Amino acid sequence: MLFLQFKSGDDRYLLEAKNVIEIIPFVHLKKIPKAPSYVAGLLNYRGKTIPVIDVCYLMTDKKCEPKLSSRIVLTNYNKDDGQQFCIGILNEHLTETVNWDESEFSSSGVNLEEEPYLDSVATDDKGVAQRINIAKLLPEEAYEILFKGESSDD
Image (cartoon, rainbow, N blue to C red):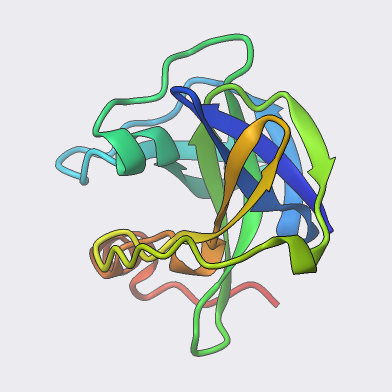
């Protein structure tokens, strides 16, 4: 399976590439007043408004910095009820793609109910890498703020 690899601090994380629409550089985002801090803002993508989630803030309570390796990953976000939306995932140090076999992943052994998007882990000679489950990335409050009343893309 193909993954996008990014870092937060010294830790490696993986986003499954199959739902990625496009990867774009860090660009200016329209801020949303009073939105939760992990909502980085809105992106105008080819005439459509896309919400962008700051994954650095979700994981560390520190906003992503505008570095050369900072990227916005546009991806399909699939709700359990079958609805699909496009979201942007802002992260730092997105520098490569990597291949991992599904059999190389195992449970982390840690169940963090507040961070359900932190999924299974795999190890190699560089250490441990943890998969991010995009379907569980948004807290329910963010879904209500960003998509309430919007119909899904078909």
